[in-house]
Length: 79
Image (cartoon, rainbow, N blue to C red; front, side, top):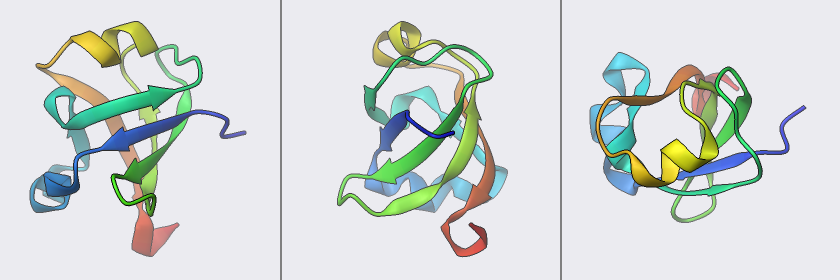
């Protein structure tokens, strides 16, 4: 199930063609995330952006600002 939310910067949509969320776009994390955890991606307005699988832990998502944070599996129009 999806009990973890990752809030992403609204500008992510401009960079979404690669279907990865760069760490610098992560604004906040709710819940406990471990690598390979399924997460909901929510934009700053609270709308569903998509679903994906975390590459980093919740602690790393909060502090690391380089590399890939989440591998996107489906974006909002496909969910």
